[in-house]
Length: 440
Image (cartoon, one colour):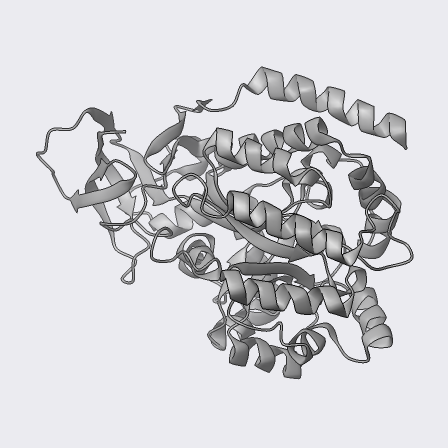
């Protein structure tokens, strides 16, 4: 990949000091080599970035690429009805090609809006197709097939035998974990307690320790879900996960809207990570997570858009604004300031994924996962002595993302995608959803 010199940008490092300065960044191969106010170093490629803002790429800690194809097909429902009536039947209808184009559609949207890393949860079948899309497009991702071996209302096409679910997950892990020089990793992905037997969850516990990989699941998203788990397992979600030994620093829980004090303490004590999905939580009327309290307990919390049919986009700019504004209503205007929220979207997300030594800030030695924003427009002005954190979180939009680099590779330049054929993906996505709907 050679060397790239980005010149004269406003660099928001997101390092420990939240340093912001005007200057240059030298990239050598897939890593950041040097930062400076004016680097006089020859490079194979020079990007003139005067007037632009350079940020670490956004890190989304909860995404469902397999659901992008279902955008607009499951509106105005609460979680369990949303799953049973719309999402599970559509996931059951998926084939290899539809999963591939669903993933490609989602990745195109993610890159266009500045996301360079995701924690992704696929469906039960055809996960290989999603990994192929991730590999081809250059996205950094931790992903895994959904595991579902329990639940009377789960469609037959999604209901797995426990042994099969475990074996298929291990096979995918052994093929894809560490792929593309570590850009792709695997996470065991039991959907949630409602759809998993205790035996499966305990196997996941042991396998995650054996392979030292993450476990990605949903918990405490919806009060109906919590009541169901309490009735069936005799305790609340997080208490149950701790009871069976699954609560550990490798566990990442999506949502955590309805935690009680005991569950918060378990999360803190066990080092469990949390993904906050404000857009999804609002649209499904699930509630508002107690993020300031979790952050105050030194719990690692990241941001995620969740899936396209419960949001209906994968835009980190929207998630940042919502995560800030929601807490201000309850806790006052000083809560969840722009700097806190931008950290959750970058280095905070990297910490949730255990990748903070590799991504999440602009520092020498880290991976060159970077985005350039062009804020030279009405909605981001005046720029004179403007707070850069405020401009990015409260004023910027996904349309301001100009250039995106992942692993030192330019995947979008001047708003033109380099690894995705836009017209093909849009055309084939429409064909794929038409095919799936005909099966229902």
